[in-house]
Every structure is written in C-alpha cells, then in structure tokens.
Length: 284
Ligand SMILES: C[S@@+](CC[C@H](N)C(=O)[O-])C[C@H]1O[C@@H](n2cnc3c(N)ncnc32)[C@H](O)[C@@H]1O
Image (cartoon, rainbow, N blue to C red; front, side, top):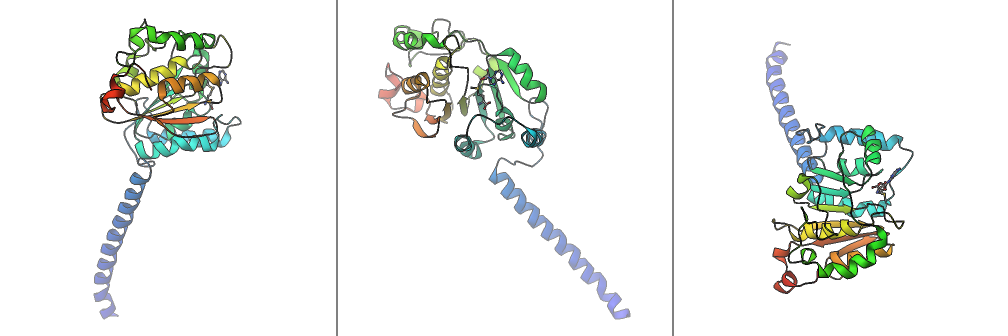
C-alpha cells in the first residue's frame, strides 16, 4: 500500500503532462484545420464593422435558414460557384448588387471579411435589415432604365469618360453607365468578389443591370492591387445581361465557369493586362 502511494505522484504527474500535451496537440490541430479549412469559421475574432462578430452572424444565419419559408433564388449549383471562390479568398471584400433571401448567407460565408450590399429599393432595405441588422446595405439610385439598354450599348463609345482607358466611377456624371454617386466606402475599397444579382431587369422601366455590369468591369480594371476580381453575374438567360457581359466582362477572355443562370469571370487589373488589351479602345 505504501509502495503504491509513493509511485502515484509520478503516474499522476506523467498523466497530467500527457493530457496537457495531448490537448495542446489536438487543439493545435483543430485550430490548424479550422483556420485553413474556411477562414477560421468558428474561432472568435474581432467584431465586424457592424458591431456583430463573425460567429454571431453565422449563428443568426443558421437560425434564419433553419426557419425560413422562402429560400434564395440561386440554385445550389449556382451558389457553389461563388462559395468555392470564397473558400479560397476569404476573408475578402465582397460587393453584392441586391439584397435578397441569400444576403445573410453571403455575409456569413465571408467571416472576418467585408460584405456590402447595394440595393435600389429603400423599403426593401428596411424590410431585410429589420430581421438582419448585421447586414451592411446602401441605397443606390440608378440613372438607367432597361428600355435604354440597346441605345446605351450603341452610344457609350462616343463618350470619352466611358472608354476603357479613361473610365472612372466617382462623380463621372457624363458616362451614364458609371455608378457615379455611391457611398465613399465603395470607391475606397478594392473589391475581391463582385456579385451582380440586381437591380431588377425584367420590365421596361426597371433600372436593368447595365450600369452594375459596366461599373463592376471598371472597378476590376482600375484595381491598384495586383489581384484579380471575381465577378459573378446572375440571370444570364436574359439578353441584356448576356450582351453587357460580352461587351464589358469579356466572355471570350475572362469567363472561367458557369452553371444554370450564373456566369463567373476573373478580371485582371488593367495594369496586368497585355499592352494591346490595356490600351485598346474596347473592353474586350
Ligand atoms: C433579382 S432579386 C435576387 C435577390 C437574391 N439573389 C435572392 O435570392 O433573393 C434582386 C432584387 O429584387 C428585389 N426584391 C427581391 N425580393 C423582393 C421582395 N420580396 N420585395 C421587394 N423587392 C424584392 C430587390 O430590389 C433586389 O435587389
């Protein structure tokens, strides 16, 4: 009995050391897998600019989609195209045209990143934000109507401030396709991913996606950093989306993949383009 008692502290000591070393190894491994698998998805981090931590946004998202009666319009295969890019690029700057039933999902798939929404309808912003106050959404006023699409496409080349070598967005009143009056933050940030799933483009007086597509192309080309911009365009079953994507996002050069009604482009900054492309008077 005496002997057993004298050995016990050794065994106990070894066991404690083993336990600590084991748990450190395991937690280190989990941390490694976690942070490499998907943007430290479940680790605590600094709160987002909205004051909500990434974990809070993700938990709210789980509850929302577990109880939601309306699901996002994009199909699972379409969502996966952007999700696959987010897995590699997050945390990143993600700009999304349109608030919808998918907004909370996109924000929670970019933990520690910046996800900002541009929405045409102020009432719809209030409706969405009421249930998801952690989303960062700005109202945007468009100067175009869907019924002007053909005319805009045939005349934009005669306006120098729309040309690929000179185009800019902020205060560019002369180029009607340029989104010239967005919040300062949109011009200041370089956007890694841009999703165009708005504004509405299914009736003549709707703004159409012409300016969103053009402005996404200008943002990507004018990037100062060397990274490409992943641009996702939804509703490519419609003529305007297809035609403007071909003209400004360059289906022939920068299209990488697509499924259903979604096309995905990787657009390099102009500085990384060949001299011929960089100085051309055509976007594509
Ligand atoms: C084409 S929808 C796509 C939205 C999103 N991808 C989704 O899955 O819900 C985009 C636009 O439709 C409008 N919208 C969508 N749902 C709406 C609703 N329930 N009421 C009013 N406007 C709505 C908004 O202006 C929004 O920017």
